[in-house]
Length: 297
Length: 247
Image (cartoon, rainbow over all chains, first blue to last red; front, side):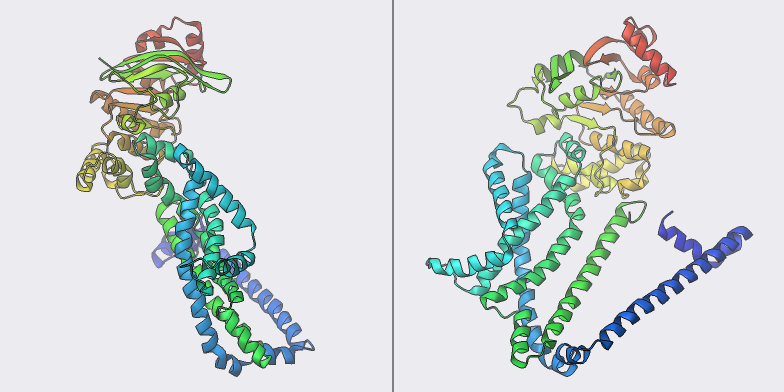
């Protein structure tokens, strides 16, 4: 029995109550009592655990200093606009990078999963690319591209560190996302391809209309995971000298020896990532329940 | 002229020979039923006709054209062949209507309005009119399989292949699918079916072939093969089917 059905039984409308038997009414009452008991236990255990934790922290010998250097409200308020401006850079980089990553990763995933003979060199290149860039730490790629490319002094190629840093992020994340997309494509059962091909759809039409729509739906959660990681990793570009939220917090923090700007940056990141996660979960759940008779599985 | 002409087809997977010297003619407007135990080669034969498998020797002709020629346009051939699978294989992300109109729109260039009208007409004819906007997961197995058959009819195939289309259904649902196939037969659709439903085979088949270990052991009218089998192995198989209560 699904959760949804149980809920409606526990909280039936007037009409439903009037037609059920006495035994069922008893059962409803028992279930209500059980549910009240569960809520009570959950509340007590939460209060005890969180209470103990906060007492331990507040009673610790260094709490007073930590409170001043990490949670200075008025100072936090003062630096908010600086960190926010930095965060705007993170957001811009994330938006631009994610568009580029989507295109590159899809190209890589399609190349790796293609079966046609003409695609063989691309298949090999894509495999090598993913192997290489998934294995190198992002920080190293940022260094190599950020300092290496300007050193080449090729005419017409930018030495703007923001652009080069973003390129480095795109290069690495395309490899990660390509693998997520590929796993999604491979997860669609071969019988779906067989059905589409036997209707006369070409290889490309089968991919476009049958395989990809199902594959993409399945990889939404891991893709969102990568998007959140991307938003945070755009901060690594700051090592090239770009002022993002983390860098802005660092500049402020090292000026006053107060770490509150870091906490401000952390909270700002959470304010973006948590609603993003919830919204995507909601969209996904809605699409699943529309397709499946049994609701969320 | 025969719609389908299969001559001396051989097929093996690794060292295992799954089709041995199979020859078969399917005249226009007739139904050919393939019977035999699981693994006897029925599904493989259908998959070879549909070019989902490449044969190792022999030839298959569709309306006089050799479709086993490696230079053939596979997609163009498949457009003339309808195939329905045991496991339905409807597209779960599309509604019933979208499932049916996909191929006519994308492959045959029918206008969306026309494709929709045709699909609704077919759905209505087979009693599924009000299911048009549902997703496949909301339908019963029998309804899903009927939609799958309608989907392959929508491209107006020259030949319809049904691969054990009732094997995944409970006995009550089997009937609604079989009655649809009977309707198609009376409409004159040329069909090749693999099935375990012997009673049904007797009703629709013009020709019955019994396969065992990749060979056609016995063939003839339903009466010849199913009532008066000559070959010992056919008799054995039918006796076993009879025990299972399928005859």
